[in-house]
Amino acid sequence: MILKQSTETLLFKPNNFKDIYDDLHELHRLYSSHTEISAGDMNDTDLYLPSGKAISPTGAAHCLLEIQRTAMFIRGIHKAILKLQQSFPAEQLHILYAGCGPYATLVTPFTTLFSPEEIRFHLLDINERSLTASKKLYRELDLEAYVEEWICADATQYTFPADQAIHLVISETMLNALRKEPQVAIMLNLIPQMQEKAIFIPENIRVSAQLLNYKQENTRLTQSDFHPERIHLGDIYTIGRTDCKVHEQVCIQIPDEVVQEQSLQLLTEITTFEEERLEIYQCSLNMPVRICDVLEYAGRKINFNYQMGEQPGFKHQWLP
Image (cartoon, rainbow, N blue to C red):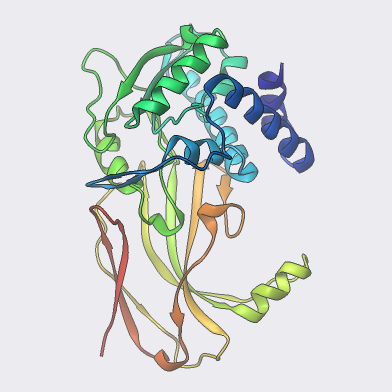
């Protein structure tokens, strides 16, 4: 079965990109045939919430096909489940997936590795169409025994069930540099509710300010062994299970000596769990976000503030 095959490929053939690509596209064909939601659909709309944009079922389906993104999250979640089995021996692990989309992409593969007695899912999405699709998928694949509940709710407001411990929380609701989508608001709501040994995926998100040289970055595209010079000016936000707090203003200084080809950019590094990490250019979540060229700002300072609300993201202000 392609579900089992693709899971084994993602976990145990991390460098076989052709097989990962082929298996994920085959898996997409399986999922879309059951849910009638495809990454290629054009007639779908996002939801706009007080905490940011909730992507459409089609947008969520498309995430499956970002091979490095899916692979790194699946490998991180697998390691987290194994660790939780050590922390909570003989317990059934309850997994809350906030923003599960139509395929429950990041947990469905684990139905091929663990029994319903070992893992149980709480599938949450604010989009009723996504939940309906995931219900249909699980019913037709005979996986309903894995689901404790389907929850139509806003993850930024959701409260854990009082009568059930949650061991693992997964939420991958973000864009690069934590723009537009409610990842931060979800983490700030859910992480404080977690029990001591519970795990949140992703484990850590770090956004840094760096100077990139566009000529060198372009050279990297054609010369795989070329390493462009990137000047790290400072981290502007780190958020995760052990460091979950509202952003505080960060001041960054541009060096006195810069060149015309350099620009100030925000880079996003995501640790799904332990050593499983997504870095620059590996997927859409790691594409640099350009702030500006810096030639005219040599020696200047710039403040960054993370703005919550309908349009979450970093705002900046140059100091005199």
